Each structure stands twice: as C-alpha cells, then as structure tokens.
Length: 175
Image 1 (cartoon, rainbow, N blue to C red):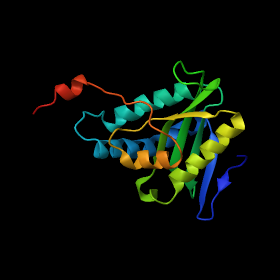
Image 2: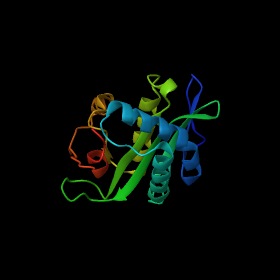
Image 3: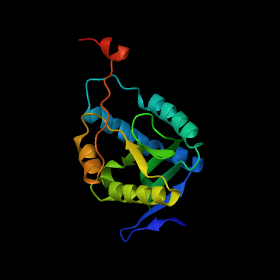
C-alpha cells in the first residue's frame, strides 16, 4: 500500500501496526454503541472498560506475523479502520492454508457510514491478504447485525458458525 491509498473524496487509508492502536478508540466506541443499538437485551461493558479490554486485545493480536491495521482518515481525523489478525493454520475442521486471517474489527464513524469507506477498507484488506499470500478469511458479526451480514455476503463470504451464549451479567439484570 506504500504511502497510503487516497480517494477523490479526501479519504486516505494507511497500513500500520501498534502505532495506530491508540487512535482507534473513538471508532471502537462508536462500534460499541452500534452493537448496543442493534443487539439490545445484553449487559455491555461501559465504554471506558470496553476500550481498555479491546485495546489490550489489539496489543496482543498485532504481534502476530503480518497482522495489520488499515486506518481511514479524512483531513487527518480517523473515520474508519479494519483490524486484521493473521494466525497460523490450518484450521482443524475446514481445509485452509497455513495462515488464516481474521477481521477482528471493521468500524466506520457514524457520520461516514454509507459513503463506501467500509467497502474500500475491505477491498484493501483483500488486496493486502493477496499480497501476503493469505487466502482464508474469517469475519464475525453480531447475530442481529444484518447490515454487516449483507455486506460480507455480497463479498462472497458465507456463514459458517453460530455462537450461542449465556452471560451471568444478563441473568442478574432486574426485570
């Protein structure tokens, strides 16, 4: 990706690593709010706790060989990002290559949603994975996030797992 990808409408997307993590906080918090709105009925961490936990994961995941962040900016202000973790394969169930990518996060600022930034980030994720020779990609989404599911399915991804959960914090909520 070199010095970054520039679009005619003023978006610049750059590839980076740990140096980008602290810039992701507002976009993570926007995604965290989106999660609460599309899948209510669960007990969610407060924003500050959620970010500290996610930041810790990012710091661990970015250490993986070839893991990366694509950061979209408008006028130097972060407006979206894709965080991709690369893990050793193969998978124990499906036939995969020796490395598997997982899109841990795709977030676009609420004011920028619908402008193609998410699609552009995914296009550049695919291009970087091709460059790295990684052909297997996993993406998770909330069960109720039908918009994200449609986006991924339009790109040729298919659902493969459904997670069920029981969270003690949800059971403890007053009726």
